[in-house]
Length: 165
Image (cartoon, rainbow, N blue to C red; front, side, top):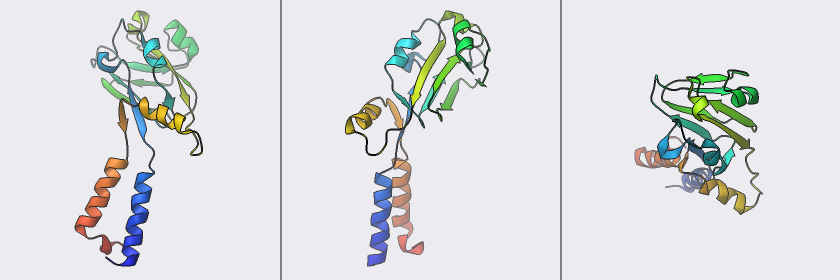
């Protein structure tokens, strides 16, 4: 391998190693999106950052997920309707630093099927290692582009890295 190819390989590895991971927060963990669960307690045990996902797992055609405003959340109504998800396995990107409000629109909201979360901006790269560790620790099912990047790297090496450099 030439020096030029080695330099490209080192730069590619450095880029892969510094990727940011997003966390998939599964509402209710193994209990899912169902009546009678304290989602406030669940949410208080998670730290949400811009770029993370919140996912809802439930019986399709029995429940749903609706994003509303605070009034809709407090009163179990469609006030401030933002979106509706009905797949039974919904992944919602948290793309803004704000408070989000989710309810079940099939009546489950009146039985506790509602959750509100606060999404924080990503910590700056110069922030303390403690903030980064907290985000990593809150990751139950963290999704990282590292695995995909690693597979691309292996493929490049396997199939001829020099062909693209």
